[in-house]
Length: 615
Figure 1 (spheres, rainbow, N blue to C red):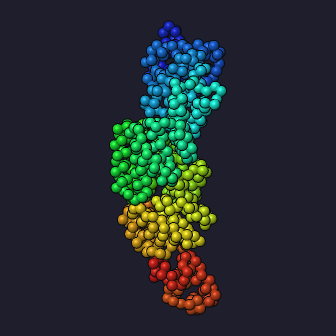
Figure 2: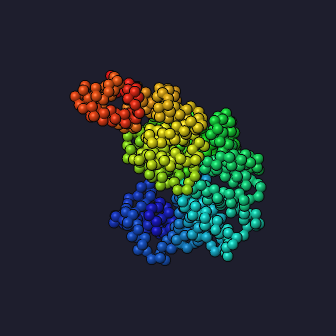
């Protein structure tokens, strides 16, 4: 029994004369069991009614009805929409007990779904096929197909489970291994490719997956498969900040017997490494070659990765308009190929940073929210939440920013070594921490910070704004940290200005040239251009900067005291002028120095004039 069907399907399955069938349908409609037909389509009026009717049938009746429907649909597939025929056949044959026919229909439906990039449907059909496999069948191969579908469908957790089961069935020490391949080399190959797949799925869950890749490479002889795993391992090592080994293996992969996809991945890894070194010419050359190889391979996943790498490089260099326009092409490519929850989520999570930088916050919030609503894998979810948390913080909702940071942290494995992702999240966590000194004590003491200037400069920017305790360490890092490109230079000038070693005007000029309105507004405020800074924050919908600076606003009495300090008055003269005791005047002066984060009365006077806190 089915919940809805065309009249033709019912007629074919029911084997009733037409007048008798029409009478039965009319009676069911009049009694409120069926709704009135729409375009020859019959449906139960309530799903509970459908369920009650179905459960009231005897098991033998159910089997017979499903068998009739299966035979009718197989004889005339036009009785159902084209994309429903195979899934319906699989369901009818399975309940009817026709396991062989059901398995064949499931596998055909899975192939058809994959051809249409409908990966969730492919996975559903393959999961059903696993329940129909006969004794002695190669279950490991079926599990591998389902795990691969999980990757594209964005179901990384389930994919790891399936790949792990498949890998265990290929273990040569098992008493009942899956059917043997034609040679040991074939068995090694299948195990290696499963390890490659499980590693990729595990990385989506926020784990590094390196041990699987290393084991897979070791199982293979020289050839296309080993080149593929070597290229993947090189890229993963780059993400885990093991740059020297990544460079070595990516260069080796280019020399191996690999296809266009393998060479494209290797070129993208080497392009990213060149960008870290500041060699933008090599980055552009290798990225262009990767794009050419990707187009030749026709692999949609690799094309999305290539677009992401180029968009990310543009964003790193301050070319945010170009970065976002490029990323949009990648997001559309992911959508066209059914990769929205996987590659599409990664593109959105990282490329939305360009929108944030440009001040297009409503647009950035919209694309990130849509991305999160599609429930991407944990690693990609953490990336999207980190960017969204930055928007909430700038907009003044510290509670929402802290919530985003906490959820992002829950989505990253405690052992995940991807520092370029971890440092971005640490930046947000430092910005929202109630006790930043405690957190920064660990963050700023990490031994690898000099290897990540792109992520560490913004982190130092946040740290310098939020703490005085760690300023010696911040100064030392700022002196040693490499500077690659104009964005990092603007951050460097901001950090130096924050600790009193450079002019805020220079920092403002750097952000103005990059067209970064929010950071420009902050630098302008600190440089004393309060009017322009306020206009910018108002246009962005940002919170006023007074709550973000390292000192709170002065009280009216403290402003009076500061004015007299700027005139060179002593505490005694200030007290006489304001009709208070010299001791009370001294307390006010101490409070002013603390709030302005300066060490002397002379510095306080200079800060007062710079920030236009006195006339």
